[in-house]
Length: 214
Image (cartoon, rainbow, N blue to C red; front, side):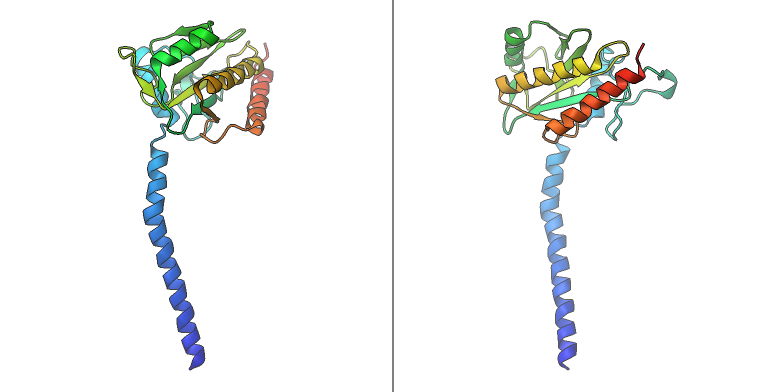
């Protein structure tokens, strides 16, 4: 009789724990999902830029991950870059005003161009893009007080350029911009940007240059 009671008690505990885990997933899991869904994936971010102006059409080709922006296969060539180098900048409860961003660029990076709500930052032999990290990927130029909570830097490697050097210049610029705007740096998956990830990107840049050496 005692053995049966112990078995019943064990099953009761298992059922209770299962119910608690289900409730936790329902109430706390949905909150986490809501926070993640606020992040705009790469496809949603860059497609409006292409559709509106076509300026980025030749600059952004594809991501290797599931958030990739893909070109039709018949347009790809052996020299098409297989990876965009992306650095995100965000700050907790921090907003970045379009007008203030321009003033920072004018003060610390004269070598840039405003492409209508997003920017090209020129490196030694190429450039990388600075865009609004949220949809529609650009600032509303009709509003001086337009603001965002995230910025994104994108380097699309091009055959014949020094991708390693260009990437290093983008990292340096990202660190400067983060310092001036009090933002944090994140990788393409919006994880904190570590030295290990920077090294990983550098190896990818080196590999691209080796594979596309002219």
